[in-house]
Image 1 (cartoon, rainbow, N blue to C red):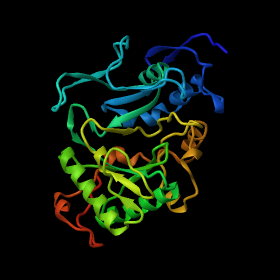
Image 2 (tube, rainbow, N blue to C red):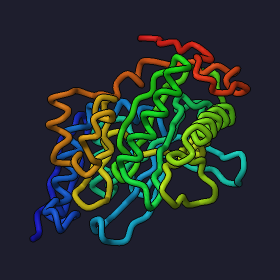
Image 3 (cartoon, rainbow, N blue to C red):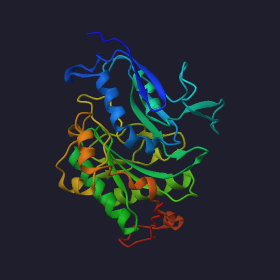
Image 4 (cartoon, helix red, strand yellow):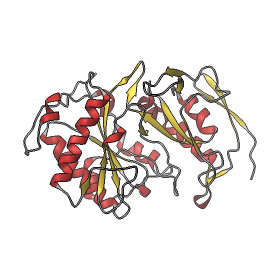
Length: 318
């Protein structure tokens, strides 16, 4: 079924949208129009996480079963009001014009061009070399269950709390879970990655049947890997409230620790159709990472997990 193009007034910009009746999730009856409507609805909650962060899109022009590709540079034909940042990687030649999303119009313009998924950097312009987030990416092996992921997340929470730190969990929208830690200014990616790896190694030593440190490009087996490599310049993780190109249209959704403890939910429960109502009921559970910051303490790089706090975390409200 075809649908005529429309022009939406979104804030100060007019955005032309098209093919709204195209089935992006054929088995679930979810259309491109449903996707755009979802992003228009959740934009006020989603946009603060994108502010000044380069974004990588996973583009599916024909829906989730078709050809797809990743894009992080400025698309041809992008409107002038869609901002970008010039970036020159230290390890490679060339300059990349990284895309930034400032408003709902930019989000919808990109989603209309087939961007189902949005992934963000751990740093913001103007200084992309300084992360403001530490990310613990819990990646289950092929034989591990989501219940194993939740158990691993609780062990990670205990390790952080012993250090006086508080992490914030969200689903990846697939089989994993991610725990974010907002950081005070001043850390480098090398320091943060080394610190996250240290925590991962300590957890793997304490819970060898449950948790692993990843080796190589893929992770297999029954254990849950703590992927510390996500804490590298140019690497990115899925934005809170981004839809994933998976059956059922799951959403990367913030959850509270009580849900992790109860183990009553699965990623497939948190979908494009469910999350807007969840936001109305619970609000944005991830909001504290926007205004709080934790000091991981450089001394932790030499510490061993003996069950006692190694450093104090500090929260800085606005």
